[in-house]
Amino acid sequence: MHHILIVDDERVERNGIKFLLQQMGLTLEIDEAANGKEALEFLKNQENNVDIIFTDIKMPFIDGIELIKEIHKLEKEYKIIIFSGYGEFEYAKFAVKMGVEDYILKPVDPVEFNKTIGKVINELDEEKSKELMQEEHISFMKDYILYSLVNGAPLSKMQAQAGKFMNTDFIDSYGRMLLFEFKTEAFSILGSEFKDDLKKYIDVPCEYLNLNLQQGLLLFPKNLETNYKEIATKVYEFFKMRHSLECYIAVSNQWETGAKSLAMVFDEVEERMEDKFYDVDKHIFLPENTKEDGEDTSIDDDTYIKQMAQDIKMKDVTRLRSHFDTLCKKYNEKNAVSQVYIKFVFSNLLKLIHESLQGKEKTKLKDEIDELYHATDYTQVIAIVDSNIKQLEEAVSYNPQTLHREIESIKQYIYENYDKELSVEQLAEKVYLAPSYLSHVFKKEMGQNLSKFIKSYRMEKAKEMLEQTHKKIVNISYEVGYSNVSYFCQSFREFYGVSPQKFRNQGVADEAEI
Image 1 (cartoon, one colour):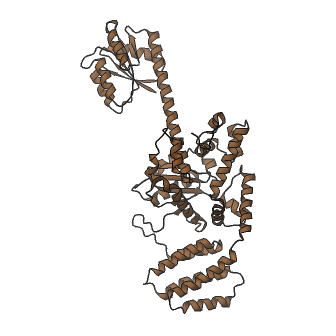
Image 2: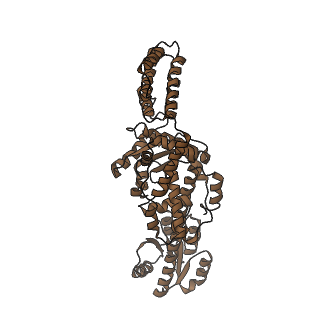
Image 3: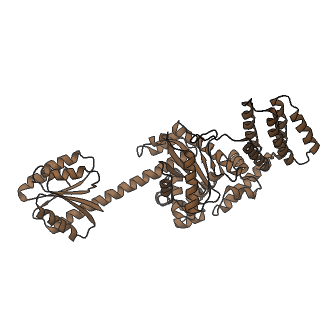
């Protein structure tokens, strides 16, 4: 709705203009001012969002010409129309030179009045439409740049593509990220409409970035004073209470080096997210040794043993080794802990490893536990357990050729079923691997994580269909695994930098041409 201010010292003139506006049947907000001084005070009030100003020329205190000069000093652009008698015609011509939109002679001709108002309102509508399109395009470009940087694109490439269209300084404003992930491709149901509600619910300044059908990312301003454990809890509650969906959340450490760190920090937080496969009852994963509101987040021994028991069960020796090294370092730095207690902790771990090693004799376990309890120093205890971890590693190590075949099997399944729901858990079941291990080896062999590989293939197939067929975009969306077409369009735009329709109409020379 447009807001009009009528400025004239004669009430009858103001009423006449209001009557003509009402006769046009337009939905307008109309205010009045009896002179230029009163009008200027009204315009300086930030709450009065005026679009069009009708002003007479000859008025007390501040006349129309002076009012126009003062209006130019204000920060906002207005559409100004003057109305004047024949004797003031020279003033009117001067006002037009000052940027006035148009002028209307008194007595006002209704036909001429309607024509002038219609032209000005059409101009306002066109300008507003262009402004909204510009804002929308900048928003899409921003998402495209962030998505590309998170996935390892060089900053120089993004800056070159943005060119003079937009400033990329916003990239350096972020300092922390929160990754949330669902077990299923939940975003095919949620779409993109939820994001404003989510940001409002957590009530902290942030940017939302969609990654794929299972993952979303929140980016927070650098040095934001807030409790990230509370934010993560709110994110979990939002999806649980409002959408009956459970998600897993991983929070990054603070970083300082801007865009160059985005991909590196994302790798770190994605690796932290893998803890969900080991601690199935836990949904929030914060950086290690991080304290929130004075809370001691150091991990107790029982938790370490549970983590390593899960590592052994999943046959993930890499993570077992990582947790074991952390536990060793912990006790190496705590000289006050009794030797008996340390030996008790590591003997329990030794039992877990023995239980997983088929064909290992029980007498061998007894001998090693005896040896462990008779050890005279800490390094001997570590060496005994380390030797058993190496045996476990040899027992569960995959033949590289076998592993390659399993990855190829997963890829082939994606190629043949990209139109269906695909999750890490589902794919892991196909090759009888732990989801975390599949994620790890897939990224190691392919150079990108599984979710990104799936999205990239779906986007490539969508691109082919847009280029080579006349299928409707909604049908293409369904055929590449997106049941929500608006979400598909958003994902395509973030991936290629243009909408599916624009790609079909104009094409792009490069996958990210602007």
